Image 1 (spheres, rainbow, N blue to C red):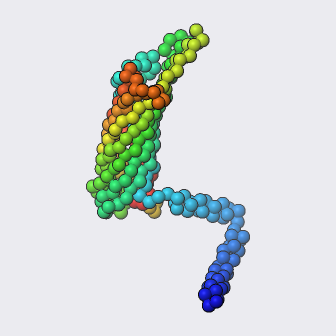
Image 2 (cartoon, helix red, strand yellow):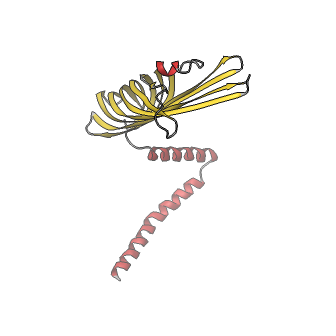
Amino acid sequence: MNYIKKLMLVFIAVNVLVAPGFAGLIEDVDDLTPEGAVLLEKKLQQKRFEAATPENSRIAGFIQYIKPTQFNSAFPGVSPMTNLYGGSFDLRKPLSERVLIGGSFGGAGNYVISESSSKIYEDLFLAYGQAQFVVDLRIFQNKTFVLSITPGAGIMLGGYNYSKTDDNSQTFYNTNRWGSGICTSLSLDAVWKVYKDWGLGFGVSSFSGKLGGMRKVASSVDSSAPEIDLTGTTFRISGSKVF
């Protein structure tokens, strides 16, 4: 019985202390001009975004330059695939002030189409996704700038789709293959603090990895399918939280 009384007293105390403040907040909102209400809504959206974004995380967009000779030679009627466009999401856990570990998840792709001869069209789509374990080593940092080097290693999965349309004979051919492989990377990133815990960064990295064991859906490995060498250089721009 005493326990119930205590709960009732706590409930009454909370209402006495909180209700006036909450009522005052409602009155302040009611007094806002339309312009002020719009500004308040923007502030609330910003707060929700900041709360939903994990600490020590980074979102990046990048362009990756590649030269998959065997792959390009397999489709001579299409313009060579020389670059991919993609994005990544990184998470970090600090081990010390200058050493962080975590994961990098992302992918890239591109699409090319060519008229190989009169009314004959060939197109090729290539894409891959990857997940890596990374170690972020901050070789220099102060209150407004961080320079880090990041080695990583992981797995990737990807494939291609090729099609040929012949308007002369009214025929269409389509095929696709997918494969997997191991990938590694070594990145150099520079990040500047721009607002509170947010930073803007630019980076360059060497990426190494090949998609092999190519197969169609769940069929056996197609030894005639070309291996896809995705080794190349990547340039990116990023936004990160918790500087």
